[in-house]
Length: 250
Image 1: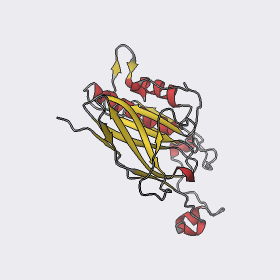
Image 2 (image 1 turned 180 degrees about the vertical axis):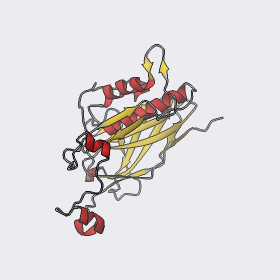
Image 3 (image 1 turned 60 degrees about the vertical axis):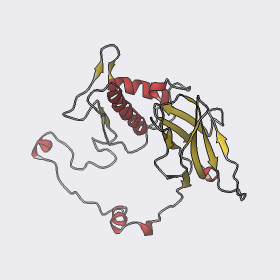
Image 4 (image 1 turned 45 degrees about the vertical axis):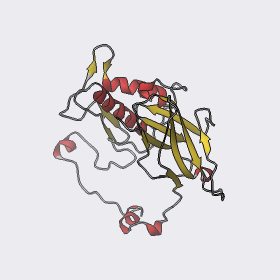
């Protein structure tokens, strides 16, 4: 008989002010789930018996978002500030009225700013203008094709490219006869529902998780996507469908 459990792997979530944090709760249950909500203790109250703040899907949508994906229940805290610090836990209510409660995880603010004096000497040297030298020169073939030896950070030909592959070299890529490639399907649906709220690299992490999840669900050889990135800035699309995605693509 399976024991009903809810657990959060990370005991501490460290996040910078203004960023978004995802807290994942792993649920193992053979029972039907009726409702999921979260509780927050800001640790400021002095009474022995704490009154937890309840976070549900109807709570402030500008601050919180609840998401579920099979055995994972996630709480997103947006635009984290000093007021969001404290302990969070997940509460699972089952149809038979039993309850599963996760352990606490603490949200802490990362407000440390390193000054130049704290940086290693090698980084201080790199940040000093006027000391750069050519470390290597182009090959004969590159010279014959008139490639510039004066290529700089600003105009390097390989800068600002991101390439996503369906699978790493030497592993299988799968497709469905009706809807096509697992990889392309994962990209389409992930970008459709999450491009308005997450940066490109984070979107591709979701794609990778969805591709691997599909292999696990269909009992086929596990695969993952592969991303090679030379981007120098965060990249946002900001389109998407601003409502709840289907269960499979959460």
